[in-house]
Image (tube, rainbow, N blue to C red; front, side, top):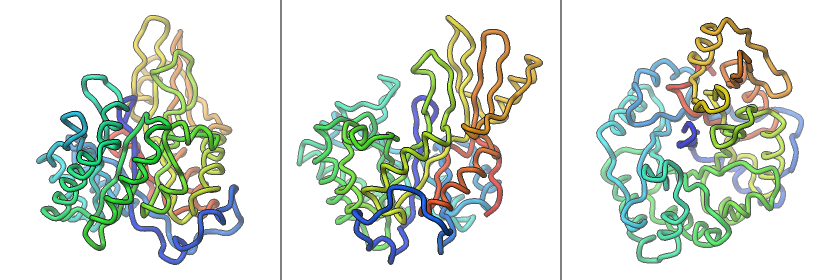
Amino acid sequence: MRTLRLRLVALVAAVAAAALLPAANADAHATSGTSTQPLAVTGYQQSSDNPSRIDADRGALTDVGVDGITLEHEGGTVSAVSAGMLVQLAKAHADGLRAEFLVSNWSDKLGDFDEVLASSMLRNAAKRANVIGELVQDLTDQPWDGITIDLESLNRRDSQPLAAFLRDLKAAMPAGRTLDIDLMNSTTLGGFERWGYWLGKIAAAVDTVTLMAYDQHGPWEPTPGPVNALPWQRKGLDVLLTKIPRAKVNLGVAGYGYAWMGKGKPIRTVTDAGARRLVKRHHATAHWNARAGEWTAKFGTATVWWSDARSYRLRVALATKYRLHGLAIWSLAQADVLPAR
């Protein structure tokens, strides 16, 4: 639920009865009808974000995901909960919302997610146990409602230890606290497997799974394109739902965009409001791309794509059609104010 560096997540326990359905019975495509439960909606906040955004969006949200905690010391420990995280936690609870903290393998040194760091923890029993102990202690010491695991850019060698880590962490967590995992999107089962996601085992270990169906295109590639086009999101859901019950799945949604400013110029992350300001500054015209469900604009050598409140409404309709557990948006600070539930 990050810009190029950070990603999104989500939370909340799955609907109990639906969660008992075997993963093999999860449909691979959308079904008719709507969910019997209202969609859960998670909004992500970084620890340094203005907590007033939680107030602004509280009518749309059920949960707040707070980023976050990172792996440290070659994966043998995790960073401490920061004062900024506790501010976000207090604001979420004051607004009657659940709050979970995110745990990631983000590396400031690399400017990206560190597979070696994550694998060092996952494949070492002593490190894994120590990290679990520290995370459970945070849940014991502070009134968090759960944990979101956001280990990204993994590979096949991490599949089995990741499943074991999730299983052991969930077993050690206090009763009533929930465990979510963020998964990078893929349009094939083989793609999920290459990312280190053993979907069936993951589904059995966690309460919810958030499909990070954003960052389809971005600063890592020179060719502009949608941030989270609807067809790409549907394809990812269709694959995921062959292994994971729909009542456990949250659809990750972008609330930001990217601006490709031209050859030799940096590719910029833009907020929804920032994208509109950029287009206006260059006297350009934004066009709604109905297939992608996003806005785009061109001026000079620049191209901008962004996903805003109109885009979000289409993802609410998609999650409802697929009868998912909910949605998760990265991030409140970058997105338009969300429409109330």
